[in-house]
Length: 443
Image: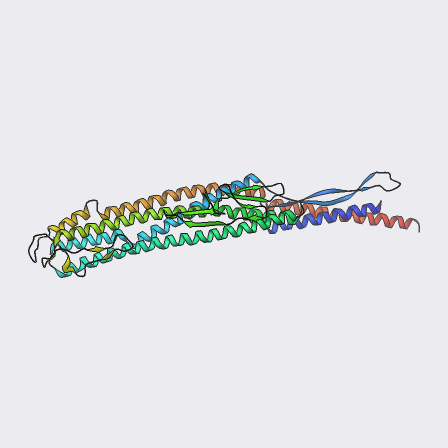
């Protein structure tokens, strides 16, 4: 009897200690987003009878059976889906915001207004050399602002492409790591701590992959993950397939898996592609605005004469924001008078025609429209991003409530298993007392 009590007490103490260790592990990982709460299931230890006991079964204590990991396939999928949507919106918004900053910091609208103001001052005295030099300086400054804006868009595009290349590389690394994790899951003993840790690693990898490319995931009976993009396998068992990226003619990004084109529906890589499309459209508008300024100024020059009686020369060279430059070499080349006027004419008819062309639905109005549309697009995308983030946060909270660590609950478990450990210690003590009493009877 005492021997059985000793075994029962020992097994109970060992099981309680294992449960205490697992509870302490939960508490240590309370703030770890990659950790799912563990619990320890117990099983009875049954000893079968010997020769004289036929096949009777006697209970001989308890043993730790399996490490159970809190999980929810639906909540994990929802958290991954919503986080991929937020990552897409964040990447697109960041790219467009950088483009807007480039345009605004260049000061295109201000430069256009200043150029128009210099023409208005020249109209007061069309032969004044200082006023003519001021117009030339204003034109040169305007050309510089367009080039600065174009360079800013180049930098924004380069940054997006660099991030996309880095994201593709990271996704491929994650795919390879997930394939290795699948191999580890296949070898691990079900219900072991190692298996639970591998499942944590699997879910963390899937979350990061979803944020990059909005992958689709399926789990087999063993818990191994199969990942696909647009129906093309990215990870299958212990095999992974590389994602590749290339630039499309329209400025967006094209993605392939194993040479097959795939369409992304979420993730930061898709957001980068969408931002590149927006910047390409913005560049087209900026080049159109630049061409408008070039055409208006050069047309006016061609229709007038300079103070020395020669026909006006082109004011600007180039065709877009990247190559616009001042073509005039001095203020004396500004054609303020209409064709047919005499030398040193104070007739400002041609200058006035240029001023009217600039004023009525001219570049300033176009620049204002460009900036307004860009600001409106960023504002609407910010609202969308914030709404998606709220949804993602809700999904994250739901997942955390299901799989995360609740310190109050763990404190209760600590007290429970500590008392169980002490109780089993008393069982062992009672067995020892009984054994000592039996030994004392024969004395």
